[in-house]
Image 1: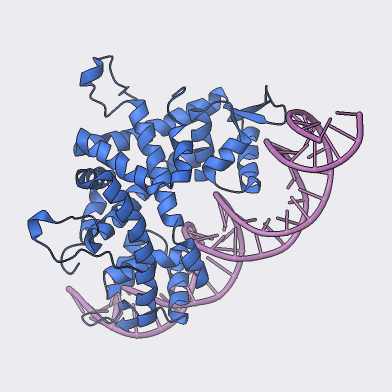
Image 2: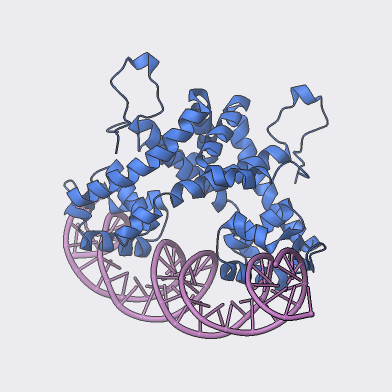
Length: 170
Length: 170
DNA sequence: GAGATACGTCAGTCATGTTGACGTATCCTG
DNA sequence: CAGGATACGTCAACATGACTGACGTATCTC
């Protein structure tokens, strides 16, 4: 348990990073920022009788059409039983459809229906409004800083998975 | 539903903020960054038979000793029944203690016991390790950008509450 | 003294996660 | 081509942490 608190040093040249205050500020902003952003779409989801778990699935399926169940399981890091319930409900209500894998027919490929794409687009629109407003008020340089810090919070092993959501077809 | 997508413009001078890609990147990094950070302490909490709800209460009580129940309710934005259960468990297991309010005896002031302070310190130590590492790898300028964007995600009405956690005695 | 406020609590429900066990179709490899 | 590994589905039981609605008590304020 090495102590990584800031050594007493001159106020102007503070290394900043390791002081308790800065860390608590990050924890708090992350907590409130994250919860307020996710809260933003609860009402829209409730209109359709869906919850946040459904949105997460919808989101990733929108992001990577023909995602397999196994890939989605890795992204969400939940059990297949939990995901199974969510996918079943989404399929029953006609938000997603599935097709057998082409290269491997054991796989199930996930896609949004038109209805599902419409809902995802509306949810995205609301998230974009909030996030765009925060981006604009913070400024472009802040946005790249925001990304860099968050990337540093993702363990090495998971980074490829997250980065792979972009690129290729995004 | 005004369309706020990027107008076709020169690649170098992109306003950046409103493009779908940048927004999705923010959503994804926020999701993975937040969940990975919070996951980091689950094991430690489980050792004591506690969950994340307990940690949130512990955290804010550590941050603002003699916080009232009402203030904590506002911070957590949950019902008093939910909070009541959490506080009862924390008190039964000797992590917190309460005292009647001085100026208003209807209030209940919340404080950590020594045991509670020890646990909170250990949890904080683990969060600080993760967050410091992300801060250092991103650099100081990125950290302030990170804060600014997150502040922009917090609705006006809630900002005072969040900022008040700092200052005064922090 | 009357009403508002701060807090507590009983009872029931819901959303979302968990473990563990087991079944089937398909793929791959010796 | 047989046998094991893999991808997915599913049954059952349970934990956590949220919710609503209703009601009770102590205390403050006017």
